[in-house]
Image (cartoon, rainbow, N blue to C red; front, side, top):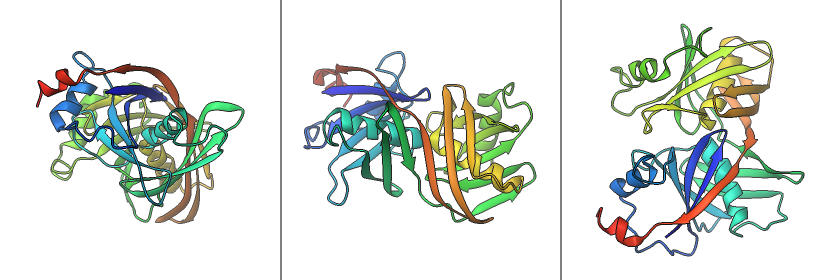
Length: 272
């Protein structure tokens, strides 16, 4: 079974091509996906993405967290699969746009002709935002708790993130937790991801959630944000209808091929 490795702002993914049902004999059980994503015994990644055929779009994106569970939308993964689709020929080499379905619906992606690693991804609309003391909670394809702090660059993300992710409200279904320091020129963001259960170098849906939350919480007129994550920089733009409705949301950043390889089927059979 051939695999490919991609990363977007340090958020890394194992990519599998199942466009022609070539993986139909492989049981991608939770145990196998977790093994492949393991950084010591497997390939190592924040998640695994399978590209499949879809009747109404160029392809379908199926996303698994590193714990092996199929999960909700992943923004950086969405940008990476758009790059991957062009790499394997599902999308024409000269195309400037593509469309695909993910668990949260239809997405558009745009390619930059003069920057081959640059991908711009349209995200789903946001229709409900909870505003509390020092935080916002919203769903940008995945649920995100955004906590505002002046020490985002110093905080113990794993320890503080777990306190929120496993509190009585979120323990059952989980939530991603973002710590955001909003400055005049950028937002410094650190993210604890459910399913990974640790800090990741970046999170696309988290960047989108944090940009929108910053706009709403601080009652800002900005509609374009630069975000600095540990793994790289991301850009988010959107149209604010009101304090509860955000549309035309775009996530932009690099999506880069890292390497490719093969997994022997007998290695996976031993895990079944």
